[in-house]
Length: 141
Image 1 (cartoon, rainbow, N blue to C red):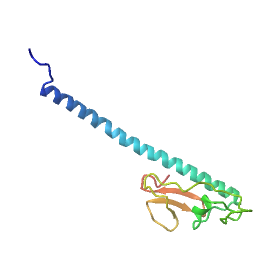
Image 2 (image 1 turned 180 degrees about the vertical axis):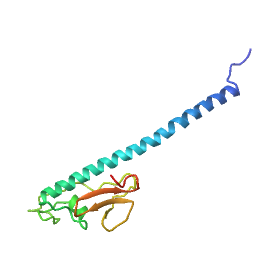
Image 3 (image 1 turned 45 degrees about the horizontal axis):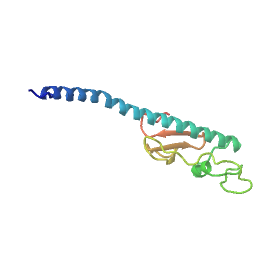
Image 4 (image 1 turned 120 degrees about the vertical axis):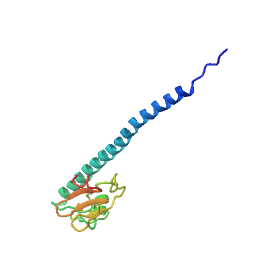
């Protein structure tokens, strides 16, 4: 009586087919992670820009100061933009913290007018422009 088993050729064919399928599927997963980071970046930018505009509306057309940007966005302020607590500090906080840029994994905010960093959020105090400069692909977002 002969035993039923797979031959070496049959096993090699199965392994080759699985290898071809893996080669086709794996690049699609890496594209999905890039698309997820793009989506996260766009969401973060929309949120931050919206909160900067809310700050401007509540502070008589003045954007947050670059030097105190993180504090003004994450703590309570008065009408003049001074950070504090108690009576008169009725505005904010606008966000819990500055989110990380999903491509550079940093939440540093640098001054667009003077710094040439390519791994941070860039903020321009005079216009309220907030951008992600992590690479050439995202510098225009």
